[in-house]
Amino acid sequence: MSDLTSISASRRENVGKGAARAARRAGVIPGVVYGAGSDPISVGIQELQLNRLIKQTGFFSQLFQLDIAGDKMNVLARDLQLHPVTDRAMHVDFLRVAANSSVTLSVPAAFINEDECPGLREGGILNVVRYDIEISCRPNAIPEQIEVDLTGFQVGDSIHISSVTLPPGVEVTITDRDFTIATIAAPTKVVETANEASSESDGAESSDEGEESSED
Image (cartoon, rainbow, N blue to C red; front, side, top):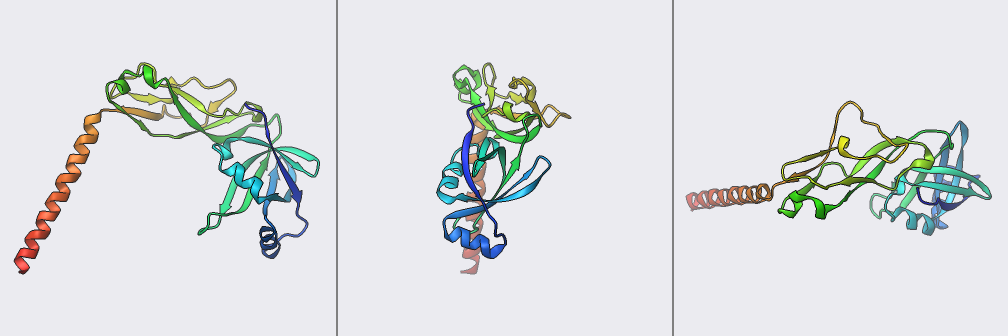
């Protein structure tokens, strides 16, 4: 796990819709911190700081150190509310985590060794079924990504979670089946699909032309 990214926050004494709107007008995004058996804390985070963080990959799978006027705690981002029109951040929720606790979160799948994949070298296409994998682990063991090694896979192969080497201390939450992460699809399937779509389109155009002729 990489070094923790620190987030500076302030306590919000005034809560409610009116106080939240006033905070946003001042460039501060309201939020709440909860969990670990402690009372929730209403906080405010500078909008510019939060915008930088949410634009980075892995905002919801990264452990942060939240600094509330010197009171530091480790947290995970759990929810982010955006304005439906402008996509401006409106509210953020953080989950307080203890060092000895277990957390559940989704981390991105990273596909490696594409050059060592015979199926891709032969023109096959990597069809990703799961871009993220839900895992359970201690906060200090959260990986930035789960590496999926493509070495040796042929056209037509499916890549299951059983073929992935998980980092130490990390477990997947889905344990009742060997779920698929990706497949190596044959390129002809894409061509056939495109041809079928073209044929259907041509057929529809011919039908339309026939109807127009009959109306004439």
